[in-house]
Length: 425
Image 1 (cartoon, rainbow, N blue to C red):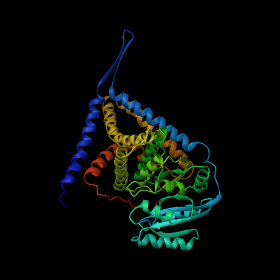
Image 2 (image 1 turned 45 degrees about the horizontal axis):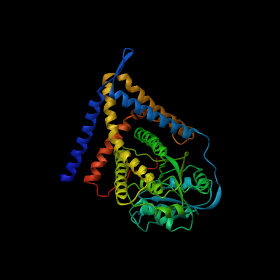
Image 3 (image 1 turned 180 degrees about the vertical axis):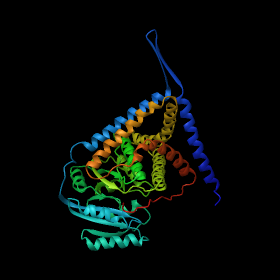
Image 4 (image 1 turned 120 degrees about the vertical axis):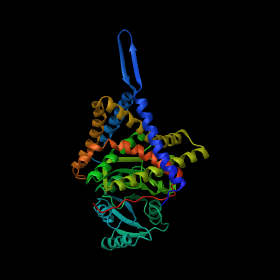
């Protein structure tokens, strides 16, 4: 099949963009800086060492905060019983994995809890499995999405069709933490509007280990947003009240509804709390193709949200708080390009003095191992693959994905989305 003009432009723009950022980073990294306090001393060093050093300090500092967060004492106050809670499990082509979320939610220590598996009208296999689960377990019911086509509308369907005032949401392949619902209700009944737990991919092999490492890296990035009052909330391992749902008009039908939901909650002034000790696990991609496709979908979704938020900011009056949120979103995209520049700095330093790159590599690996040791101790994950040594490449991959996603969104993307293969591993 001969590619069209848009596809050719997208591919050319992607490769040229990546090359320009790497070349820019390589040559700027070679610039010489000199600090002289005569006659006491003269110090000479390359620019790349400065930026790589600052990056290492920033990543290690936020990473250590993440490690502290997952290692500190047990989860917050748990409420074992109270108002009815509806657990929502959107499922599409998930017949082989939907048991994961349903059975783990059935094991939660909260009562009363009902579980709604929301399926798409054209997905007979998942619908059949959901009906089997509903027949086997009294708290489980199967709903058919009345506005088919997205996870966001499936969640909205389940909320609007319920009389409950409190909800939790999980992906079909997630194993919910046994205390998640009770912990979330402790927060929601105490005045929180939205509660967010932590999600980790299960590192069952080499590719899965890379996915786990990438999630740890992203979670350290969430901490940066929290420093300016922006707490990320998602559409899985999430609890919220009906009042909060109504305040933002539900989940928006966009590619990454969770990112936009975070902005909706921030704009509405809702209280969002998180507990990274309240951890669920999800199935990781098993192939490089799936890992790339899933992460590219998320990155395109991020760019879509940035586009929407910039348009909203230009069309209406926004206060300083919202301007900070928009700036954070834009900064998240620009950071992808900066990562390619920093990668080139690291490459230059490796050529100049190979030993110097061991410091940032050691910082990244220490953070990942600190988080993994907590997850392993709690029985959520097993041993990591030797692919752990490739974890620093996550930053390079994130930069490449950002450039690719930006050109694809601008030139060829038409609303399609990528779904990974799930096997129940």
